[in-house]
Every structure is written in structure tokens, then in C-alpha cells.
Image (cartoon, rainbow, N blue to C red; front, side, top):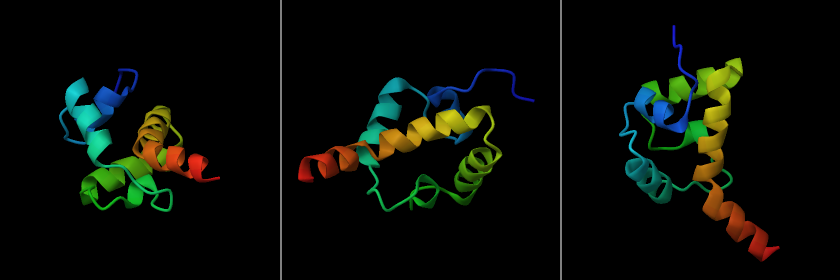
Length: 86
């Protein structure tokens, strides 16, 4: 059982990624997705990472909100670009 309140740092840890703020910022900056690619279909996830993300999103459990935050952050550049092109 996981007793801590999920955070982006803990999500990165669960995904086997460096949970430092610097590493998270770098990951988000270098892994931006276009709006047509859902988070769980991103080509950079391993099978296990994909399964973790999609299972918690589908369960709509306490991790789902953190997964949504990461999803939003990984689509930020394209959302901003799209709004300027409107």
C-alpha cells in the first residue's frame, strides 16, 4: 500500500525516473507532445511506465490527478502555440 500523497516527484520515482526538480523540468522540456498524442501513447515510455500511467488514470485514483498534471505539462508548448495560431 502506498501511504504518501502522490506528487509529481513521487510519480517520477514510481516511473523509475530521476525525481529531482531539475530532472523533472528537463524531462518536461525535452519530451513535449503534440496535442494529438495522448500521454500514455508517448513513444518514450517503457511498457511498464505506460501500464502504470494508464492503470491509475483509468482507476481515477489519487495518482490520476498527478498523471493529469504531467499530461498538461507535457502538452504545454503545443497548447500555447495553438492558442497563438487561433
